[in-house]
Structure formats: structure tokens, C-alpha cells
Amino acid sequence: MFEALVSCNMDFEPNIKYFFESLGYKVEKIEESEEESPDFLVSDSASTFLVELKTKFVTQDKSSERDKVLLSGEVHDIREPIIR
Image 1 (spheres, rainbow, N blue to C red):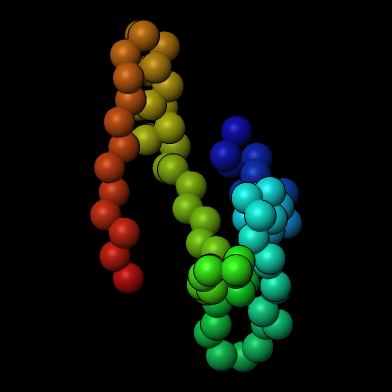
Image 2: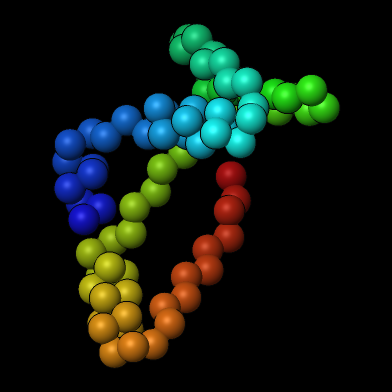
């Protein structure tokens, strides 16, 4: 399934925008430039924050391992540190 998303170059930005808007936030797309910058400015009456969208897909090996565990009726757990 994830491989299909990668191969069709799915654009996740509208989904992220919709997610925050459905929670009541105002979402502004930050114009792209040559320099690295966040994707969105998200705010409400109390808070404002920047959102940088990153996507990551599992490898075929990990996907097969996950499927095997889930098909056996067990719970599959993935833990990955988020480090820049």
C-alpha cells in the first residue's frame, strides 16, 4: 500500500492542512523558496506554531514483518527515534 503512495507522488499537504483546520486552527501555507523553511503557519487565538511536513515509508522487509505479526493476531510495535 505505501509503495503505491510513493510511486504516485501523493501530495500530503492538503491532508495536513485539512487536519489542522478540522481542529479549528487557521492554516497558512508558507511560500516555498530556495532556503529551507517550514511548510505551514498554524494558529488559533492562543497559539501559533510552524509545521514542517516530512514523510517516511517503511521498507519492504519491515512491511513484511509487520504483516506477518498482524496476521498472527499479535500487536506490531514500531519505535523509531526522531533525530535530525
